[in-house]
Length: 493
Image (cartoon, rainbow, N blue to C red; front, top):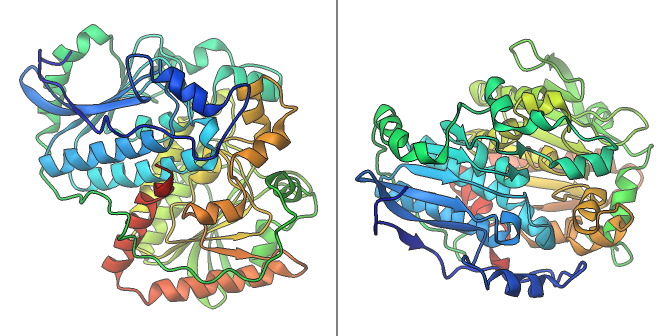
């Protein structure tokens, strides 16, 4: 597709290591060494090229490298590509092909979705032009980040496109989705992608599309400097977590009597006004949005409302559209946004895929990362998959000690790696999903001891953080937030 001899590769010196010392049926280090013997050294290749004489930035997924999975280095390569495109005034053509988040890098890989969404969002807000062509297959974290954040999205004929892959759905829920549901043609018919375009048509159709979009302006996006993160965190409270592993947190978060969103609202919210649905006729009972006075502060709050006595909520696409509606409302009203995360994972249904659930998750991350108002996220309990991370690109993240965040529920990760759910405890402990690990990689700021009466202490902490953020100049706060998201898991790369 590129003009002969025009492609210049970027960042081919960035290659994956083994940040968690991970082993499943085979050590991750051995897998990396074997994969590197192929034609590509990483699961995405980035660079610039000319297409019919027009220079563009290219991001090409390499499925042959560990199924194109998205790890720390993939996240960094993607982020740097958009930064270079912004600085050079180039449009971007993204061509993902991915099996999702790289399980062997656990939460470190998972938070790359936040980094990517923040960078792509900044690129687009600066006037950048981004076209995506989804190849076979594009699933999971790659789909719900750079695969779903383009202004125009095309897809390869017959491409498998979905938030959760068919085998994992069947393993977890006992029944697969009908095969056609996650195919490019069906999703185009439902408006999830804009057109189905064969590979041999790209070179002829892309120039006309870019002409229609107009040239992007040049705008500065400084390359990330790990020494200039500019954030502060309070000291950890004296918590005795020495005997706790990640699986303990998973089990505690799923306890039927664990306090959820209603308990937090009861403890702290007054003058509650409910905002129903997505503003366009859609509603998901698992997503609650309110405008309220929270410990004396007027806020917009959106949260997962798990059914009483059950596990965390599971939202459909309309639930995440409703959340985006809440985010925009907060920005319009000039009120701080509080998000509350407690989910067993996004819905894996026909309706969810047809409703563009991956795009809604990506849209939540991009929207929230760019809000001008203060934002505080509470990781309250279960934090499974894209349905959880969608609401975490905040100025501050607070979590009780037995909350967790993972690319997929441990049972799902076990299914991916071992084709059985029986090894979920082992996987949970290997993927660095507990809040202490999440603090170490830069996501969680404060950990609350979830002893008796902890919900009131949590509410106090949220209010304290909101007051701290309100005292910051807006430009400073937005800069710190962007650097915070841009730096996630940076040391692991």
